[in-house]
Length: 214
Length: 214
DNA sequence: ATAGAAAATCGTACGCGTACAAAATTTTTT
DNA sequence: AAAAAATTTTGTACGCGTACGATTTTCTAT
Image (tube, rainbow over all chains, first blue to last red):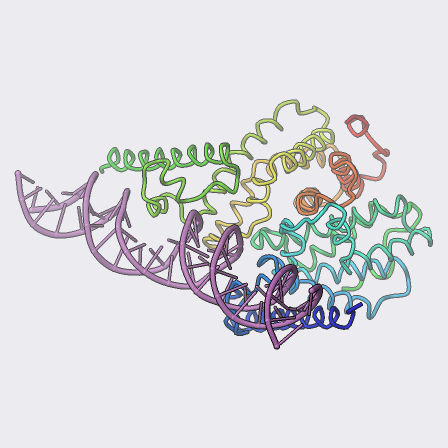
């Protein structure tokens, strides 16, 4: 089997692909998000514009690659400083998620507000959604809370409700920056607490320690 | 004052504008949403492509005009069959809002998931957001519920929370149609009930009549 | 009626994403 | 080593949104 040849090829291809991603990053840094153009990107790496399409099916895939990098950073950041108390850990994750959306609206938009042009088969598309590090970490926190008896209901239902709710707040603030949310960070906090209220067990008391800070 | 002349001019301009909107509607009906093109639209009404820009600042404005028509229909539909009981009326409005998003993803996306390119001044932009009929009707329902002592908290805060939460569910289902929401209508229902749970007064009991149907 | 101002309409051109097919290159087979 | 097959790269071209400036039409003031 020519596995060495095969893999070398793939590795080279992957290298060129990440070279393109790096160039895309640089381009965005220098000229802003809307300055990222297939033609400019190609020129920068010495390719013909159409050659980019050997590595990305379309422009959206480039944007997704950039956004996935950003989300990986989010996951790393959220992993640090994670409180031991399960409910506070959940809160922490939700807060980081909201902060990320505030600080990275372009990346947030490409992942969470843009229809996936390449839905492959239905199966793959569903996997992709579940592979978002932010969502995965949230699911784990929910699980821990359920085991601690702090939340009531189905794990998947709770997780889904929590992320779509926070997502609603984030995306609304991105789309309508002028709407009277008040301070955006504060509104995100409010939404998080209200959402948790809806899924908390009855006897849990109004607020745990984590809710007061920030 | 040449008010007759002035107004006649404006009226003519408005007529041409709505002729364009009508043509846009027809175009979308015939060729689908992505078939709506400035060039095609101009050709259809016998204009040069650039002439369209006398009536719309850019393509987005055309899309917004289409979407506003759709949202007006939503308001009309939601106005009918409105339950007398305030909380059920609120539920009704939220349901209609969710159903609208499900049935009109393109229009929903235009209004709620696309950054407004023409933010005019900040003031006008904020006004526009508050002029959405669906949101206005929701605000009224919230007000009625507050007067009836069914909800707790600030009117604006509650309204904002409710719409961003439902919006989160709708937009998530639009962006990730393959995610395991289960039945979309059912998930919307779940989110509505959970969101209401978070803002309901304590003694209101688990569910009113409206929650069981549907 | 006519000159001047204002507004509406249009022609041209740019950069964009990308479909398509030819060309160049690399890999596999003989 | 040579031929064939596969893959990568590129040239060309299309339709798109729209910036800019010229042109035509409409209104206003004399």
